[in-house]
Length: 586
Image 1 (tube, rainbow, N blue to C red):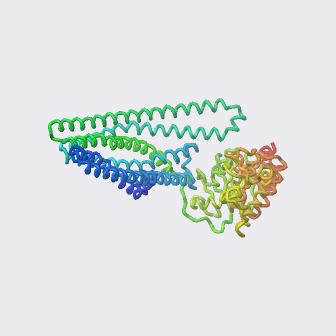
Image 2: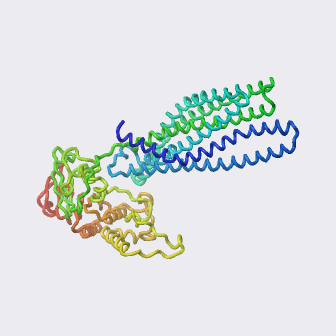
């Protein structure tokens, strides 16, 4: 077993064991409830023998009061026990959801490999919920054991044959129920796999809806989702059939078991071994046993589904990191010098490249794949096949990934805007302030110098990216919602907001990729000047073929076929290098 797999299983185990106290309380209250439930038929038998048969009105009234008190206790013990169990289940699911999100957001990556975002969302919601429900199932199983034990003890005291039937028959029923749950477990896992894939495809299609409409590919997308949805439906129906067969067969076995107890009890009453009250108690206990035995059937089904979901959750938690995490702290302060030595970017040779600290470097490419490979290496989403990337002389592989993310920000051109206001997307860490409609007061002013400085950083970033113009064009300014994925904005507006977000973060090293492909030439030139001004004195790398952005760079490097083809200023390369002219001006 690998360390990642073991870690995933440990998290699952802790999520269940972490609620042991709450589940234990619920189990104790449930046991009290089950003992009381088992005692009710016994009390009714006593009432029949001592009060009804003897026609004693006083005793009848007394026992009716006892039964009333018993039912009040039953009501409260059930409510409190069920509340503890449900809370334990929800808390365990919450713990798992947090663990999954932490793993997905881990700076080392790897959890998202081979999975659509919708699949991960399904694991973090439905599968986590099913695993959390194991707490409630375990508690209910303890309740059922208490109820059956109490019934068996009383039946033994009343009649040894009846007690033995319960003691010997119950384990057989539980074993058969476990065997019948195996097909459900397999089909439940397949059901969740198909459902997660369908969710992932749906999210993928919705995210690309605008592109699909532009290509006229709506019908093909619908057909793709129809096939996926049909496969999910088929898996769900198979799981439902397995569950119905399991439930039906267990209920049939349980019914036969109860009928056997009633039959033996009736014969014992006929030959005088049992009084009328004892017969009523025996039949009542037999009927009461139907509840705990049905609970066992439900517990088996829940555990089968929980095991299937636990396997999926463990797979995400145990996913191997995309990069091997280092432990060394990031240099303090970060000068921002990046150096590539022998790094293969899709070409036959390794690339040697120096990106000096405090300078704006432009990188033009003839092959977009080389740009993607470079970005992934600089952001350490993956480690190069050969060679090394260094920050201030320290290989990235030795640095702590979380600290590295804070020092080197790679802003991809296809990054995502979140559902919320424009302002919240530029400054994600800011808490939204409540307005007059929410608290009956005017908006609060800045709380002090720290807030003022943060507001100034935001204003400068918005101005440099010309996202302030976007805000002014919206109905409620920067407070306007941009919709899921920024769908209410045009392509150029989204790019400006994304660039403003990267500039607002203000990392020591900023790497941006094609930040202006969807804006007009005039705005692009103004953004280029704003970018140079706001990043003056800090390391900035712009991977683009935009002449406007390359023109403001201190130095430009041409990557041709995965190797360094030329270096110099934009003006010099335009004059001297034909390959550069073709890549940038064509």
